[in-house]
Image 1 (cartoon, one colour):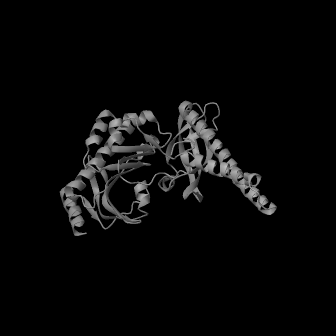
Image 2 (cartoon, chains in turn blue, purple):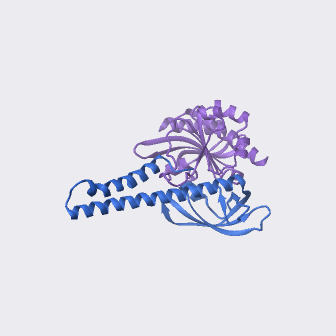
Image 3 (cartoon, rainbow over the protein chains, first blue to last red):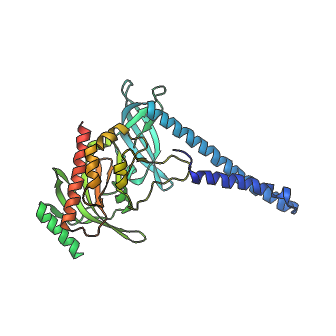
Length: 147
Length: 197
């Protein structure tokens, strides 16, 4: 789970493209007003590229953390107590879940989790549904819900 | 579609299945989500095989063109705690991949441990599916059966306890429908066995 070619292309397109546009007035003689507009446009593009780069790094760290918990976490179960969706991300429901976590060696506790899921998964998130979870033994608040 | 009706009629007579005016299973699996609530019509209810109860029916829905499947739906509720979703889709079947915009994690992962199985199917699961349980489910004998299973275009989707076997033919005839029921029942039985282990 990492940034794919589309992600890298988007970062390169906006980041390098923005820098190139911003640099145009340095190499081409154009009126001051046009130079300012060009630099601003390039700067905005470069900022978008930087934002995407930061988001990609955040996603990669999150994926690495999830992989680590999956490899070394304690396996338990999560029973859905409440599930609802009031918004969508990329045409998929953003589910707000309240779960009852049962993990060997840890007290049973109620936790909240928000997950973006495909429609068929979201439709099945009903109270009583039991799903596997992996909990970080070093920090029981960190867990992966296997849905 | 008189031929299709008669195929289902013959299947109902041969297996003692109960004809239904239509069945609306809801968005239980990716294929049923794709169908956007289209009903199964014709549809039959009863024992698919090996003691597995379910519904078999014809699913047709239109996007840019009309897609037709014959599907058999059974319940394996115990599977959710072990494998929330396992999709075993015939290679070459066109399905919509999970949404992935280049940055976020994918919602599914290809299971490629069995080369033989992967020659015929693309098997996808949750990214955090327990690999040991999956390895046990896809035992050598089950893989061997799946590799040669009839019908040739058989695929299945297991999602939160709902098992949907499907074939892409418009009208597979009564024998083809019977083979679909048998294959779905066989998969349901195998999953149940592994859940009870």
